[in-house]
Length: 479
Ligand SMILES: O=C(O)[C@H]1O[C@H](OP(=O)(O)OP(=O)(O)OC[C@H]2O[C@@H](n3ccc(=O)[nH]c3=O)[C@H](O)[C@@H]2O)[C@H](O)[C@@H](O)[C@H]1O
Image (cartoon, rainbow, N blue to C red; front, side, top):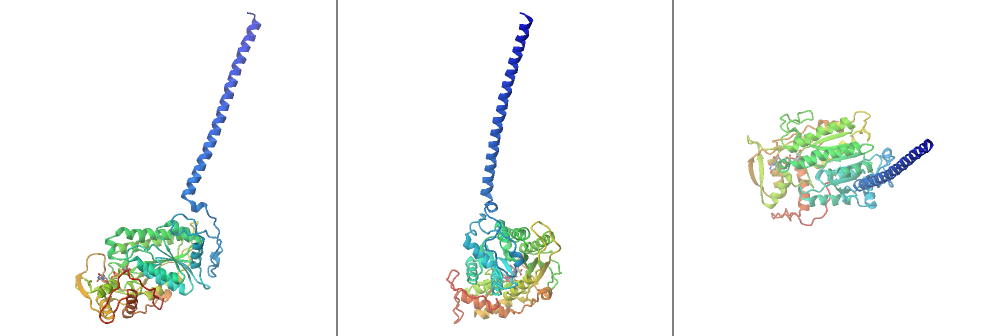
């Protein structure tokens, strides 16, 4: 074969190979381009799926703007009302409180102060004994009040519902909600410009803590943290918090009268330990977030609309029903004594603490502009009375003798006596308890016999029964 032909054939083969290579390259490119499209589509689909998942689980973050249609018209909260606050609706975290626009208007109306310089207060435990009295007293002087309560069955919930109805009749809304519902607390505190929180929701009862220890941790520790978290990190500006500690933090302290300067590191019950833990937790939230916090150490508070689990109340019921009561004596035979404190005095103390709380200094960004107030006060009566004396007063008022069983105080968290020094509260907000146990128990018995339809005349005392229909009654005069 001539050389020229061979060259041409060789060139032809090379060209052929090039063409094949080019075709292969083009095929590969096509393949790459097709896969890129597929990848792109898959990515878009995955993103959409993520957005849908997010929307299902966090509707509150997506469904509402952060502006208010009806901001509270509080003269006192003018600087606060300039902030736009989130809508209360559509949280989705709990169906019981998301009820629509009319409901939201109702909550905002309840929170709105009615006079210049008044407060707007979220009261937790508002259907409880102290909470209901404080809510009414705040409302009566023109403050805005929204209550919150989980209506648990620690004691007869129908009494809590009756308090709720009474509050409703005075224009105070009490939401059915738990302080451990963090989503609700966050939404409420970010949506409504509360100036203060009066945190009274708690698991009460000294001796019951042996039977239900976890309830105390859940309410008095976890619930308190949920409340502080919402106030410190979701309200803007932060409210000042006033909360219920307890005389029980003095535990095995023997110095008397009990002063805020005394030791509180020897709690005698888990109840006391959770309240003491609360005081330490308060310190950390004040320190880190600049939250203004005031703890109030209540001393055996009693009065109309009281707590049926407490001795004065359960003794009254037993006396009327002709059932025996058990009285605890100390090992050396002494009567237990309590610094029984009348509800109206405690209410004045709570309002005084709110009025002098001082501002929080933190912001949602986590920065504080300086130290905020951190306070703790005794709210007692300053005059301890033997429990036997309390029983004698009840016997006289109810016109009937108690069947007493006296036993040595069991080791159940009880303490033999309490006695408050209230000089700090007197100095800082003029707290002066003014009600003797005789007068206070008379107010209690007046309420008790009407509420339970007890006939104390003619010797035939009759307790109409827990479930009997009752009329709504006013709280005691001072509140
Ligand atoms: O200040 C507080 O921080 C606490 O006050 C209240 O606790 P206490 O002072 O223990 O009240 P309470 O139970 O009414 O017993 C009163 C007296 O009756 C004696 N007592 C009691 C029951 C009984 O069956 N027999 C008896 O003798 C008993 O030995 C005691 O001497 C609140 O319940 C508590 O939630 C918390 O707020």
